[in-house]
Amino acid sequence: MAQSQQARPLEGITILDLSRVLAGPYCTMILAQLGARVIKVEMPGTGDDSRAFGPFVNGKSLYFSCLNYDKESIALNLKHPDDRATLEELLGIADVVIENFRPGTMEKLGYGWETLHERLPNLIYGAASGFGDTGPYSRRAAYDMVVQGMGGIMSMTGQPKAPPTRVGVSIGDLGAGLYLTIGVLGALYKRKAGGGAVKVDVAMLDCQVALLEDALAAYLSTGEIAQPQGSRHPEIAPFQVYTTADSYLVIAAGNDHLFSLMATAMARPDLLENPKYKTNGLRHANVDQLETDMEVTLKQKTTGQWLEILNAAGVPCGPVNDIAAVTKDPQVAARNMIVSIADPKIGKLQVAGNPIKLSGVPERTGHAAPPEIDADREAILDLICEKV
Image (cartoon, rainbow, N blue to C red):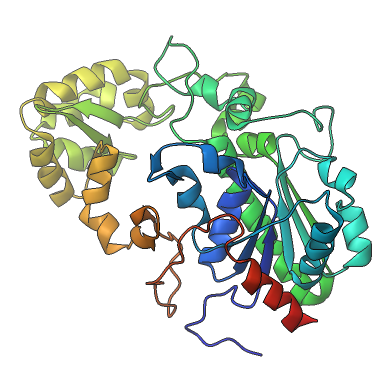
């Protein structure tokens, strides 16, 4: 049956979520935002590991909560025959199952891809792990920090000559969650087109390699190994954070035209006349001197003043916001990127909204609170009865 234009695209799709902590739950959160029904299967008593991660409000984890709202929870011990029977009934009505165990774990439980695909040929299987189903590291344990280190991104992050620096968010897990989401959406399309169900195998390390941008291609073609640049771009100048009279300012003048607009707005025609700054290549080669020359002027006004001047001139620029400033940004508010959820324990839970905006599909105004362990057992068991 055709959907209405206002319907979210995954309405009618059921996701059985066996994952925990971050990569898998981040994927299923996105799928829930797109309209899927997400049934979270948790270990009785303890639930998702992240329920024990702080910070806490009234005893409830904000870490868990920001990743698991709009989901339902049922507690099942997969070593108990009755709970296994319930899981198998849920697998029978699900469109997709998601897990992020180490490869081999689901096979030991009797629910690996080959077994499930033989029994349930329409069930899509999504798996995120540190190193994927194949390769010499496949069965190794991994966390975000491990793949950030192994995937090269830490070697490029931070200030020059400083120790390796972790990216400020868990990009290893988040990248894998995003790629897993894309893979699941592709698998749903393939199944709908008659191509059958597939397993989506996403490795965190693979995703880090895929996110290396031009650093990988540059090394393979030229032998140049990317190094930490601080806030600078490795190839473009001016394209970094600069010091103003009161704080910091990002200026990203990515071509000659924008550099001209910037110099004019700063009342610095000498920057345009300087032969060292005539092209991007020359500006990049003389980036230290360019920074010094620009900051002579930038330090004469506040960041707020420069934002008005440079934005009026069409120069890409912005402040360096801390999290508090992000939450107060009018653009963030206009795009509904902070949403409030009424939670029985936390009270007013505020989390990131859905960055995927679809024309004709209204923004969701009501969200279900992150569930307590086993909170939705009755409704989920009723769903099984309805489907039988």
